[in-house]
Image (cartoon, rainbow over all chains, first blue to last red; front, top):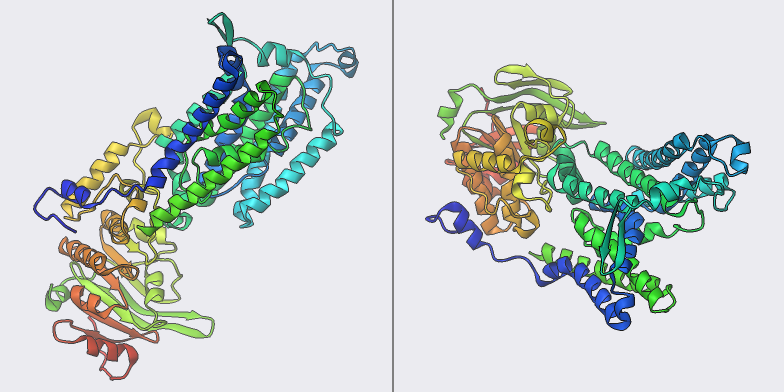
Length: 359
Length: 263
């Protein structure tokens, strides 16, 4: 190296050229810029019917489940893995939660009369059962991936089918009826904080607190703890992590368990928000969450990603859908737009990788 | 560090009569190797001569079949690389065994993270300033310089990354550093940097076992050269009195050296 006479740190840092290529810098700021552009376009087009506090409140509430799934996916993708099963696990979890909730809220006679005498027990236990269902699916994913040395793509693709099928079997293929309405009225829609902004009521509800609370905790865990450090290390170089004494398999089981757990939480949130477990929706949530995480800067090759980026990434489909509905454009265009943004994001990620490897 | 000075002391690590089979193939035959404090021992040999096998047996990657390994004069049995590391024997592998998306300090402390005191530590919160401080202190003590401790390794050159891998080994190796082809993937300037590090480590008294194909590198850095051929130690060369041609001849077997008995 150079600069033997100066103090080592100064000499060496100056000896290194600035090695942050243009594309790398671009991809870090690229997601918020896209989000901002989408917001600006809809605001210019629709004015106050899009750009108002109440509508943004709706967007934040609508984003809550996707944010939870995306946080889980971000951990998985940073380890260079994938979890395709989160949407199905969400469905299975919400069906299990609904079934347990109904079973514990009263006798079949009560339920048929739409009476829920023991819902104080039924609702919390039901929600917990949903979360635990997700956790179990995640642990199974992790165990199969690490014990059988199978690619995460295959194992979670299998779990996608298994969880969806079980959910459909349990529910008979339809939305689960007779869920105690209190889960929605007393929990999901409960106004924890209400603000008057510009004459409009802005509400903070439990799903929002849960989603952004989880995102905040996840960001701290990823940045400041050994768990986060190992997550990046395994995605960056699993063999080197193993040699350094990291229990890679155990960590991966925890990562998939976390992803499953969060899918279970999102499933429980489904009941809170909509008062029923619907089997029909959420089947493409896995792709939405993967897209959100990747658009938010998480690299499918592992080792790179942030929770903040993923949350911004999760906002893009939500804002698009909201704006398109207000614009009275077919909201299906959302899928088209997300697909294009996803391809662009991965292209930029690849370019960034290549630029780095060239150095 | 002269041969005679090294011989006067007790070996830190010593292998006696090591044999190793892979099925019908005899990979190592009655191998004896001693590593003394403050020396660079080069282990050379053609492909398949048994260099890596010997290292893997010494560091517990492969089980010991027959023979004895002495560590500070005491017989030891490493059943995993982890146990060797706990004794202060660190290995630098030929493929850059670092996590390129982490910075140098994170790589150096990977698997040995320092956590914050109290409840935060129990929750797994890292003490990054402490790790950084310990790294700087330790590397300064060893006079090993690693540029850009806070930079992710993807932004460093191959040589600088290997520098981090070596620094990690040096940081934790209290007894022996083993380097398996540390310069194989590197350019000229980067190689010079790694060789410099090898000398700096040696000068702190920690011996280095240096495995390489690259004879000029070996002659630049080694105090003693041990030649393996077809699983046997065929000779030991003094780089001051022999030439690269002698080493190549010994490796390929074109000249018959009389095997010298190592104490």
